[in-house]
Image 1 (cartoon, rainbow, N blue to C red):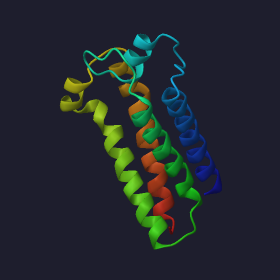
Image 2 (image 1 turned 90 degrees about the horizontal axis):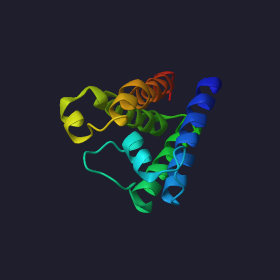
Image 3 (image 1 turned 180 degrees about the vertical axis):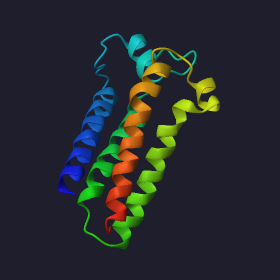
Image 4 (image 1 turned 60 degrees about the vertical axis):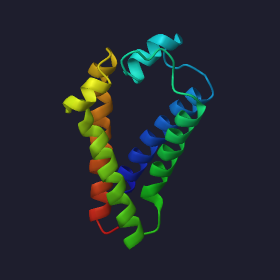
Length: 136
């Protein structure tokens, strides 16, 4: 379970780092803001990246999620891992929900959401579920 925990934490730390860059106004991996918005926000009509607060909150949530596999065993850890699994599973399912496609139809976000963002969230959910069920 150590390897699974390390892989989950590494991926979530990377996601946190990218969101922190965005919170600081550093557009990466695309330098042009509108292109980045089309790739990572996808909301119809959006032309600017979310501000520092929403990006910082997502970075903080990713940091918290990255720490979960390393919490001491027990019921609290198991419960938080299950809640985290549910949250990531919901986010992972969103690319295939019609209601989400109406909110975020912009390309290439819609394609990237189905091909990368959604499946990665489902993978994190599965990892959290495995860790929770292996004994908390």
